[in-house]
Image 1 (cartoon, rainbow, N blue to C red):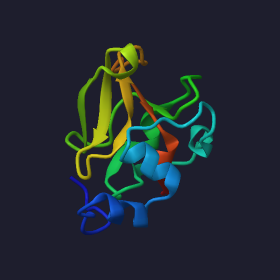
Image 2: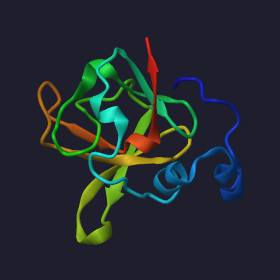
Image 3: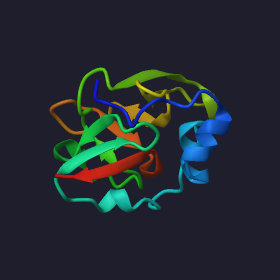
Image 4: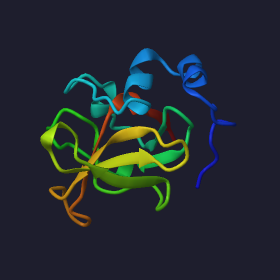
Length: 134
């Protein structure tokens, strides 16, 4: 796993101190940002998308694609083990949630309708990410 921003907060109060209200709502409360609201949808520069909560490297720009869903989308993760998945049966749907393996922050969901070679579409909230240009 990549190096994080430092020691992780111990409680919600500490998370609220380091995250914006939107980041907190998404990362810590499993929220979703409005479609097409993230500036990261249009990023075409080379670089790495990291967790806005802890800095873990999550997705590489080379694996980003335009899904036209309204959220940044990737066909694979940056490095195996940096993200984890778990069942999400909220809102009357059966989905697979994607979380940061380092801090447990909610990132979005992964679907089996992406491009080859993986066939996956990691549909990720832009507010859960930071972008580090190369």
